[in-house]
Length: 208
Image (cartoon, rainbow, N blue to C red):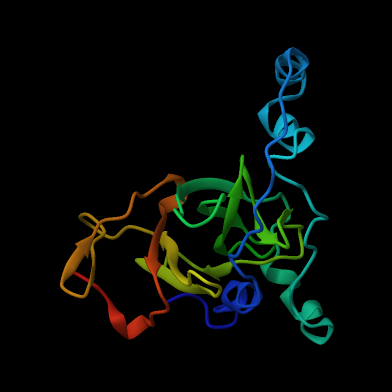
């Protein structure tokens, strides 16, 4: 349903990311932490106290010989996080950001969330996406819906169904194993569902 030239880009990028996290010891907080929180914000405090660790940005996860071909799908002005969902087995939930590509395509990018940033957890650190990480793109003027999947391996595997809806009438409802799921639709028509295990496109049905 999305532009076939860009489909599966995020899926391929995220397949290698594991959701396993290492236990981290909570350090003793002090009165000074409250002052830091007021000045720098909760994310900076969490990093300073060892509650989370920031890693280097992920500039791209595509092979070098493919990176040059995705220029048209890159977000020139960054990605705006619009919807998110928790993950009970990870300190980070999942989210979807939207952006308009360099050539005017409507794009959605899925990943783990820290604050308002999308990225991935690796070796206990959160690595935010850089401008070279692209989403799944299409033209919502021509498509009522564009969607894609991300398979995240690890001790608690996940399948993330995400995308954007255009002028489709009525609510957005999916069915999986006889149960209906109605995702929250955010700005830009972005939506997100997180399923346990690894499932495929044939397992989830979009209801009319």
